[in-house]
Image 1 (spheres, one colour):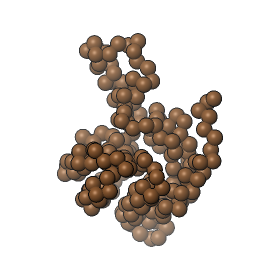
Image 2 (cartoon, helix red, strand yellow):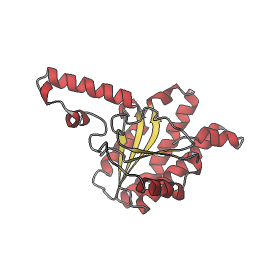
Image 3 (cartoon, rainbow, N blue to C red):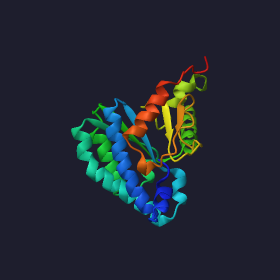
Image 4 (cartoon, rainbow, N blue to C red):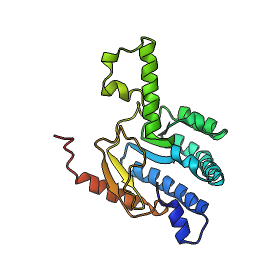
Length: 221
């Protein structure tokens, strides 16, 4: 969800104003996804690299996320939306961590739409973690080396309960993958829009889906 800082700067506002506007876009994206029949939407909320940002900005981001959970948790339950978190949630400070875990548990049986937050997430860290877990299971004789294949490896990732993404949307004209689901996006279509995240609305999502619908997905065949 790129462009918050540039959006704020272009308006002579502090960076946090862009992040606040970005929260509104997240709400709109979730609402629009439900209306458009999307079953799963992942929002790349905070990466492992984002810890390099100024401490005041990181604190503010977590504060905004906590406020979002406080305001949306009842709505998620009411609208039968399942909430998930992908990433090292144990690295998230309290009380946000407890609220995230509670919301995940409270909505686990919902199924109209799955909203997944990639939070404290980095794909290289995820893959490294998977290798350590596999090595541990092999050492403990819980897994045989000759049984390790792509399906087995996938079960050790944070996303083991999610299908691979079909469509990646990059806002604000960004062209890089940014350490996002490197294993999972092998055949995802990548849609790039110059729209900054705070301005992203239902029409932008509809345009991305329309573009996706015209793609020929041959998966190497």
